[in-house]
Structure formats: C-alpha cells, structure tokens
Image (cartoon, rainbow, N blue to C red; front, side, top):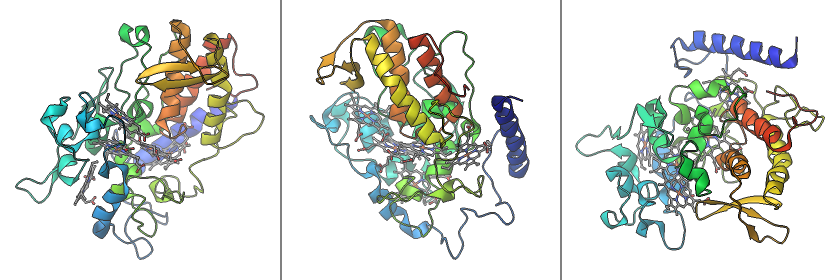
Length: 351
Ligand code: HEC
Ligand code: HEC
Ligand code: HEC
Ligand code: HEC
Ligand code: HEC
C-alpha cells in the first residue's frame, strides 16, 4: 500500500474508535474520559479551573483593544470584533460603541441570569456564506475569520488579503482558492464538537492563568504547550508538533506536522513572489503586497499571483501551522505550489 493509503486507513480507523468512545454522532468531544487515559477533567494534579476565570481572561489578548493607529474603537468596520460593545450590537459603526475590550458580558449575557449564557451559539456563517453548526464555538467563529470571500471577484480585483484571523476557515476547510482538478479533504479536527472551545479552553496542567480556560491560549507566555487539550484523544502526545503522516515539504526528513507545514510555507513563498517580480509576500491595509529584495512594495494585478498569495497568507495567518486542519493546510499549499511552478513539490509525500 502507498503511505497515503495507509494514512487514510489509520485516520478512518481512529475516527471510528473516537466516534464509538464519544458515542455522539457528528461530534468527537469525549464526554467521559477513556479509562486509564490522562484527561483534562479536574483531578488533584489538575484542579478545577473555576477560580481562575478572571485572571485567565485578563491574560488573554481579548482583554485589550488591539493596539493600532488610529485606534480600532474609532474605526468603522473594525469595532464589531475589536470591541465588546461592537460585538454585542453586531455593528460596524464606531459611533455606536465605547472604547471597551471584549469582556465577560460581551461573549456572555449575564443580564438577569447568573448562568451567563453565550450570546452566539449553534449556527455561524463564514465570509464565503458557508454556514456551520459549531456549538459554543459559534462565538469564536463570528470574530476569528478572514473577513473576505475568495469566490467574490472583487477580492482578487482589489488584491484583498485575508484578515489576520482565518482560523475558522482553516479548521473548517474552506475559503482557500481551490484549483480545479484537486481534491481537497479535511482532517478529523474539522468535526470536533465545540470546535475551538475543545482545545483552546481545556484546563492546562497546574491551572496557570496564561494558558487554557478563559485565557484561550494554547501556550503559557513562556512557551509551555497545553497538551491537556490534546491528550483526551492523543494520550501519548509529547508536543503539538506531532509526527506527520508524510514528508510534505520534501526535505527528505519526516518531521512534525507544524515543521512540515512551516517547510512548505518557506518553499512556496519565493515561487509565488517571483510571479510578481518580488521575493516576499506581505499584506498591508487589507491588501496583498509583494516585497522586493530591498523590502519595497511591488504591486501586481496578475490573478495567478494573487490567488496563490491568498492561499499562502491564509495558512500563514492561521498561526497553528497546520494543526487546525493538517489535510487542508497541506493540500492547499501543495496544490498552490503545483499551480505556480507547474510541478509537484519535489520529493514530497503528496496529500
Ligand atoms: C468579539 C470578537 C472575538 C471573539 C468572540 C473571540 N475572539 Fe479571540 N480574539 C479576538 C481579537 C480581536 C484578538 C486579538 C487581540 C489582539 O491581539 O490585540 C483575539 C485573540 C485570540 C487569541 C490569541 C490569544 C492571545 O492572548 O495571544 C486566541 C487563542 C483566541 N482569540 C481564541 C478565541 C476563541 C477560542 C474564542 C471563542 C471561545 C474567541 N477567541 C472569541 C476577537 C475575538
Ligand atoms: C470579523 C471580525 C474582525 C473584524 C471586522 C476586524 N478584525 Fe482585526 N482581527 C480579528 C481577530 C479575531 C484578530 C486576532 C487574530 C489572531 O490573534 O490570530 C484580529 C487581528 C487584527 C490585527 C493584528 C493584531 C496583532 O497583534 O497581530 C490588526 C492590526 C487588525 N486586526 C486590524 C483590524 C482593522 C484595522 C479592522 C477594520 C478595518 C479590523 N481589524 C476588523 C477580527 C476582526
Ligand atoms: C471570548 C468570549 C468569552 C469571554 C470574553 C468570556 N467567556 Fe466565559 N465562556 C466562554 C465560552 C465559549 C465558554 C464555554 C461554554 C461551554 O463550555 O458551554 C465559557 C464558559 C464560562 C463559564 C462556565 C464554566 C467554565 O468556566 O467553563 C463561566 C462561569 C464563564 N464563562 C464566566 C466568564 C467570566 C466571569 C468572564 C469574564 C472574566 C468570561 N466568562 C469571559 C466565552 C467567553
Ligand atoms: C485540535 C485543537 C484545536 C482546535 C479545534 C482549534 N485550535 Fe486554534 N490552535 C491550536 C494549536 C495547537 C495552535 C498552535 C499553538 C502554537 O503552536 O503556538 C492554535 C493556534 C491558534 C491561534 C493562534 C494563537 C496565537 O498564539 O497567536 C488562534 C488565534 C486560534 N488557534 C484560534 C482558534 C479558533 C478560532 C478555533 C476554532 C475555529 C481554533 N483555534 C480551533 C489548537 C486548536
Ligand atoms: C476530541 C478529540 C481530539 C482532540 C482534543 C485533538 N485531536 Fe488531533 N485528532 C483526533 C482524531 C480522531 C484524529 C485522526 C486520527 C489520528 O490521526 O490520530 C486526529 C488527528 C490529528 C493529527 C493528524 C491529522 C492529519 O490528518 O494529518 C494531528 C497532527 C493532531 N490530531 C494533533 C492534535 C493536537 C496537537 C491536539 C491538541 C492541541 C489535538 N490533535 C487534539 C482527535 C482529537
């Protein structure tokens, strides 16, 4: 069997096992920990997170308005996600909001009920109009997206770049420029119940303020990974950079998924930039911007260069280096390489 076939079979088998364990069709959140497996349930080594909510929230970037000039709370179009009041009102108009970051009563509605139910649960709609059932993660998806639709002709015409937060698109495997003739698939993470919340709000070992729970951070500020987020399903995992199912970047070594995806990003960048007579891909003021050797901006209206740069930025700005959806991230990068150079990534295991 080819390695790819083996990988696919492994995935299918594991999905079946997890689905059985979880006992919930369409979702993979493990309601009960697997006997004997480490879990993210409270225990003496890993106490309940309840006392830490405020400290965790304070440690997260949600508790500040993203620094920018002019300030984001004064700017139409930005306040819906960069201020709490803008999110509550779902308004783009700066005049309707005050300068407040994202607080408890913005994601939750504590008005009149102590439970503080989330304001947005269930269905969320992505910028390309794809609708998903995302449970509690509908809250996250409403803000963490690319803000633009690659299928809208205006996106390429105006050289628009994906916004800094395309995590939802990566996780759900959509809104890349998909080349005709390529079959795009998703890894299992796409189907996790409560999606983002399952990993980003899992209690971290030792219950630090700056990882897990309401910090929503996967790492402490000094770089320690919250592996409790993964271990209910991957009991032996030692690092987020889990050994990949193939040498996706073709460097001759089988590395972790994050290292493979990083390798692909590095290999692809100069190939795309070359189409525009440049050496690097950047973005500024919401537009794709290529850079030459001296760091000077180079503009192009070549759709092939812009489609490829959109894809590159989508994976780069996602920041998980593939973990959100290894299959889609790798396929998007490998198919973009082929479209740009006319050949497959040399020596690589293709997905
Ligand atoms: C109202 C919009 C909004 C919602 C809702 C939201 N986020 Fe964010 N999130 C942001 C913004 C804006 C930033 C970046 C702030 C900055 O860098 O100044 C951010 C940053 C983050 C970060 C980086 C954290 C850090 O401290 O560096 C993570 C991780 C994250 N969000 C995860 C989530 C998850 C998971 C959810 C759902 C439970 C969520 N977010 C809901 C707007 C939102
Ligand atoms: C649909 C929601 C949404 C809208 C609207 C939005 N942003 Fe963001 N933005 C985010 C999220 C979420 C992040 C955090 C991404 C992350 O941490 O990965 C972010 C990050 C940023 C960052 C990067 C912060 C950093 O430290 O890396 C800048 C700058 C920014 N936004 C500027 C803007 C501007 C300017 C506007 C208005 C023109 C705007 N945003 C509108 C959701 C949004
Ligand atoms: C960015 C959005 C966001 C912000 C801001 C936020 N929460 Fe939450 N909160 C959530 C989500 C998502 C859950 C998980 C819901 C679930 O699992 O059903 C949650 C869960 C909770 C719970 C249930 C128990 C638990 O900890 O899982 C409580 C209580 C709570 N939040 C209180 C607060 C308080 C107090 C603050 C402010 C310090 C706050 N939240 C800020 C999104 C948010
Ligand atoms: C399978 C677990 C998992 C799921 C599900 C998941 N994430 Fe992540 N996320 C990660 C990991 C792991 C990283 C990378 C951490 C690292 O290496 O720094 C990450 C990185 C991020 C970052 C960048 C954090 C930073 O430090 O700048 C943001 C923002 C983010 N995720 C938001 C989301 C959102 C929004 C969702 C849901 C649409 C989501 N994630 C779903 C595991 C997950
Ligand atoms: C609720 C269950 C669950 C959680 C939580 C979870 N995963 Fe997974 N993950 C799976 C399943 C099921 C698969 C498919 C079988 C396999 O590859 O082991 C998978 C696959 C993967 C793959 C390979 C995907 C591919 O297609 O190449 C990586 C890498 C991975 N997970 C990393 C992580 C990391 C890192 C975390 C924690 C941040 C995490 N997972 C959290 C269930 C989960």
